[in-house]
Amino acid sequence: MGKGGGTRIPLWISILALVFIHIKVQAQGGEQPTKSEYVSPSLLQRQNSVKSQGVTIIPSFPNTLKVKAGNPSHNGRVCSTWGNFHFKTFDGDIFYFPGVCNYIFASNCKSSYEDFNIQIRRAMVENATVITHVIMKLEGVVIELTPSSVLLDNKLVQMPYSHMGVFIERSNNYLKVSAKLGLTFLWNGQDALLVELDKKYANQTCGLCGDFNGIPVSNEFISGKTKLTPIQFGNMQKMDGPTEQCDDPIPPTSLMNCSREFASICETVLTSKAFTSCNMLVNVQDYIDTCTQDLCHCDSSMADFCMCNTFAEYSRQCAHAGGQPLNWRTSDLCPKSCPFNMQYHECGSPCSDTCSNPERSALCEDHCTDGCVCPPGKLISCPFLIAKTL
Ligand SMILES: [Ca+2]
Image (cartoon, rainbow, N blue to C red; front, side, top):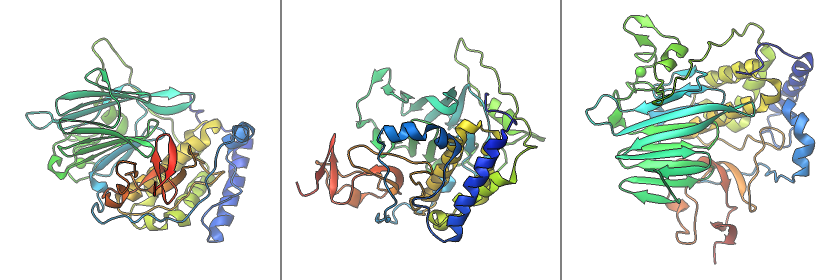
């Protein structure tokens, strides 16, 4: 997999130890990390080039979004995958499955008619694990997604697109597909993807997302009387193309040399002030473990890719659980930039105001999502921001 295995460079551990100390100092000071001294290893390597590109860093600003109660906690109906091959089933099992074949992510396999079938494929791109291809069979059409294109029945789609109960749009930093039958799909075009289902599909699903019966482990990781490992379970969801024979992944090596410092780094960020409300809603230990596992496995050059994706996933899960994560990113910790003077917000309205619908966000019932949003009083009229009064 080219993840660097257990080989650790002493300098790498030293840098991470320093990182941890910096973050810990902040946490003890009770401050949300803003202009932290945090310097991640890969950031050190590319710091100069980033500066020369003139990336806009948006500092933390107060959370002004008024989230309506119209969409309360529903993280029990969300299945997701993110970062370095991590998955969370509808029933809450978090597991690691490093497969790079085509897999059924979720389908309603137990009814006579298959309403939906979502398949995903990952690949290693420049040392990072990203989702490169998604196929959705939905309401009788086939939607094919790549990071750069959306095809519906083999025809290129211009967004927003609406037809026969399927709506495809860009929502903040996500590609969103909604189906009237009770399915919402979100993909950031990179590592993270999630599917939210209506309760009517409970106990009706198959795939990497599990059976949605409300019971963890059962029956996803139990086949007859046999307990399955995540690798065995994942391999069972493989769906090769007609002429394809994709090899199953090799089970991961053990984490014998995993440093306790890694766990401390992950814990410090995930229990920082930005996530205080989240810690009460979503079990943080699962994500500390995931983050730690990644740091142990990741090549040192990919350290912030590994950490940042799990922090971002915890933030998304928090929003699904009805929480409002604060801006945890800083110029040095997993920075994000936005075009056109837009601002990166961890918990922004998923419904951007537009010229044709300037009050859209006020009527939005969806929970918040992270992404680039207009500053207060502005709305987006592609490609420029304009004052809302115009
Ligand atoms: Ca289950």
